[in-house]
Amino acid sequence: MNITVKFFARYREALGVDSLKVQGDFATVDDVRALLAQRDGAQVLKEQNLMCARNEELCQLDEPLEEGDEVAFFPTVTGG
Amino acid sequence: MAIRVQVEPFDPGVEVNAMHAANVGVGAVVSFVGYVRDFNDGLDVSGMFLEHYPGMTEKALGKIATEAEQRWPLLKLEVLHRIGALEPGEPIVFVGAASAHRQAAFDACAFVMDYLKTRAPFWKKENTVDGPRWVEGRDSDHAAADRWKQ
Image (cartoon, one colour):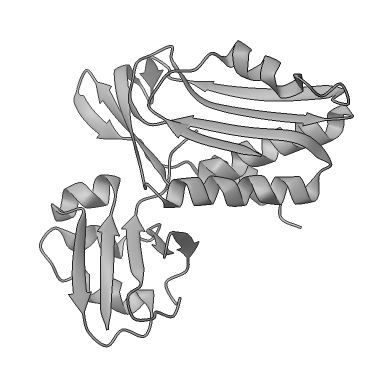
């Protein structure tokens, strides 16, 4: 399964990358998060208030994934 | 409904006037304008950068606006949010809701702002005297959004 992953704001800076592709057998968004959390600077992905999206829609970590999905991880939003 | 995400500044007066132009059935317009402050969490702020998630931003705002239109009898709804570099005193966000009677417009405007604050993918990075820092979300924003849960 191929998944595109995007990071924003503080998470993007911590990981040093705004987008990457991962390959593996991922059942949920949380499986992708767990894999990436092992990278340098990725402690942010273990934060309690982490937010995530699947295909540009907010979701929960237990959201199921399909081939080609785009997943994003980011800190609490602060617009407005 | 109109959703705009733009770098360019906007004139809140022009936006408010456009809310009832060409529709004399509009009896009430409620608008909210958010501005960049020069002070936040104990530090002087000389400016900020607004990051967003291109693609998702427009979808998220559209979803919020659609929900508002389903909940209240609105005649017009506009959501305008800026991105990029902003200076103190500049407007960041405009929400305008038009309806025949005032309550729908009041409620819809507050609802859109409360949901935008907690569900739209924008992030503020402030320039302070101590250097740049990311603005952190507030629990009070989530409490404000929760009051609209049915």
